[in-house]
Length: 331
Image (cartoon, rainbow, N blue to C red; front, side, top):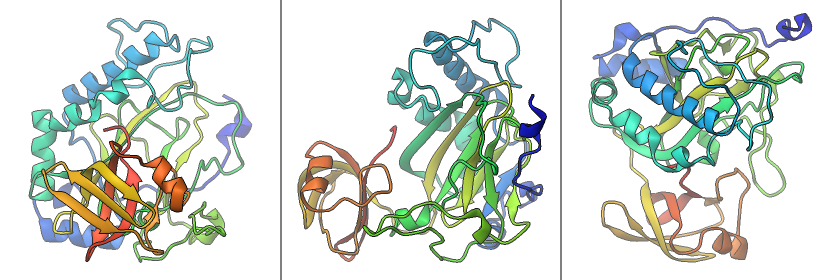
């Protein structure tokens, strides 16, 4: 490993662990509002995580990025074989398994589902925006290693959710994973906003010194972060792949978005059929945050063309007005 890369910032502290709060819903709610996250050690069923990891590895083998691992333990991760894979493997969103709801099979695995029900006090309502990451090592890293410091809340108005982030193999400081700020839970949009009203990256120097958190994440650990918590990926400067999964849960006790299929759309209106069977119509106004999957705002005919009838969408809404309109992502 290049010594210069090992010495890259940012400086971080260990996060709190919240295992002792499991089963105490009021205390968990207070911790999320205060800290901006829950971090639990060794709570996800390792056999379920291992089955998920096997799917990741099968995909990486299929595209020629790794050699067959047979029965070798892979909890600590796997190394690339040095050959050029057939596709871009930073995210495996384009692979067949990413289109087959692997995340849903994982969270519906009984021990995982049971843990989530115990944690939340109810079955989770998913905001379908799964991200599967298979980030390879890179010889090039920025001075701060941050791949894009951002908040999720400002680009998803009207939907209160928490992000569930799970390591699929061990992710240490060199592999990178996720870094996040503690205690910044106020509803302040910290992004730079461009001339079109789109949210762009947060400048790291705008965060309080000492607020960033990171640890060595291991299979069985899981992190949940508030949608207003600034966070970023870290450049992978190791010799292994970063393997992780993240997905979003609508926060219990808050309004649920529509999730379903567009029936018709115009620049000022959308009609959809929700997965519950409900047909709903909502108005699109100037304050509606309308996009495809990226954060760039779409208006008028560009929006209509990006989300034609049949498109799967998430719609945040209040009093018949769209607060958020976007495609689902990796259902």
